[in-house]
Length: 120
Image (cartoon, rainbow, N blue to C red; front, side):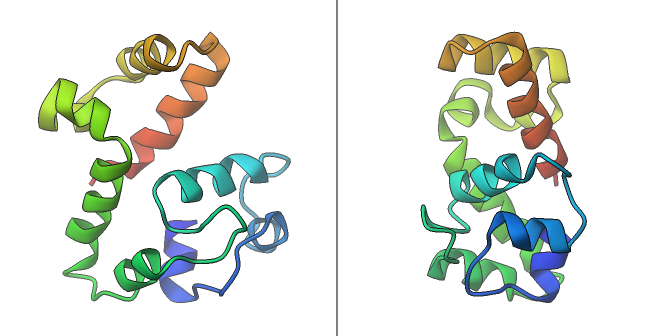
């Protein structure tokens, strides 16, 4: 999804947008929630100024700026684990999210999966 948004970031991102890109069939809401969580879109699915500013950066500047979005969104994890958070195994991340959010194994695993592709 990030690659698609780098090429063309519409004013609003909906489940229909995710479907058009052919991503996450029947799981579009997870993509939307992840984009909201990192502050790229708001609760209504509209792109944020902060998100737009990051996504229009050059290929050289984008990774560091996107890393900032992720670190800000997951500030609790980075305060606890520092930059080691980037290299945690899925099981470690799942355990962290389950403990922090009091979620099930399935939800904790989904949270870990969303975080892992963000690794710079």
